[in-house]
Amino acid sequence: MHEISIVFAHINNFLYAYLLVGLLLICGIFFSFKTRLAQLKFLPDSIKLVSEKTSGTKISTFKALMISTASRVGTGNIAGIAIALVIGGPGSIVWMWIMAIIGAASGLAESILAQMYKTLNEDGSSRGGPSYYIQKALGSRKLGVLFSILLIIAFAYGFNALQTNVIATAFEYYIPNYESNIGVSIIIGIILAVLTAAIIFGGVHRIGFISSIIVPAMAGIYLMVGLYIIIANIHKTPEVLSLVFKNAFDFNSILGGFAGSVVIVGIKRGLLSNEAGMGSAPNAAASADTSHPVKQGIVQVLSVFIDTTICTTSAAIILFSNVSLDGKYVGIPLIQQAVSSQIGIWGICFITGSVLLFAFTSIIGNYCYAESNFLFIKNNRKLLNIFRITCILTIMISPLLSSSLVWDFAEVAMALMSTVNILTILLLYKRVKICLDDYKRQKSLGLDPVFNAPKCGIFDTDIWK
Image (cartoon, rainbow, N blue to C red):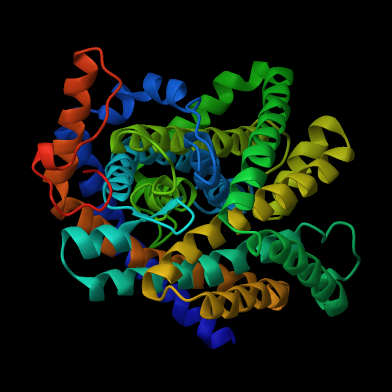
């Protein structure tokens, strides 16, 4: 097992340092330039659009936003940030901010394409994502199937194993000799598996309902605790900001280490957290009932910034507290110590509860993505139920796996699927521009934009005619 973990670690470092970071930056800068920073220009519109209503079995804009946010906002926003600050340094948070702004343009593009090429389910709801626009717009089902397989591996098995694994580590504080206590790990895995089964067998509508309630509530409480810690230590602001920006642009920090560079760690954390450009959020974007693809693209940009705000809150909690980044505490234990140093011992319980909620909603959001891609490969209810069982079994055994192996396995699968999606949306840039230009034109006339694909010269969509 140790040898396998080492292999995945080397592959992981190579993919990010030499391939994915460059592709992400190129793609994000390209779409930022070509759309004239549409990810920032239309941000005020996104806040208005989340109030759009729908009826029946259709997923509203707000619920689609919450499903994508549920997947984005997971243990990576807590444990991932704590790890990034130790490995890359405080400056990694700056590069995460930069990645969010640049990457949001890629997120806008992929979500527009997902809406353009979505398909209807039997109950009137819709589904879609990169696999769908790869097949319809590029004319390659094989490449679409490849993407779906990579996404299923990454999300249904990789990231869901990761979320469950991190949930288990959050209990280290409460249980003596936790690492050798296999029975506790099994119990945690079983409880999470049962809860997950109760939701995913209820369908995407139940996932949307749960996400639309839990995600806003837990995000709001977490942000308030972070704000309290910042205000209580407001006198440290100049010191913290100086530390962060000095480290972000320090020559040795930028070039130091193969995978420990402040730039690599920050950008990698930005990608893993906000998922912009990697091809996951479009699966949620496609499920929304809306009158124009750009509307959901704009709303998904909002999700990127919500996620980044929560990551920033985690970083602030650590940097404004009295804990050291010397490596004594890493991941969940680090942020548990940071919160408890500010608000007392109950802060550890608060972080444990936050991890449970963040991770659980992320699990069901990840499954939602995986199901859409499974149905792309084979729309068969019996096979779908078998697939659901394998996902539940993965969650059950994940607490027994090595954390480093789970992290690297998930990140490798994500890097491969992201590469396919980035190259695809670059090839489909002209369709994104056509759709954006149509939205802008209708907005300039004072209309509520409604998309008509044939009028825009696009004839290979299913439902925009």
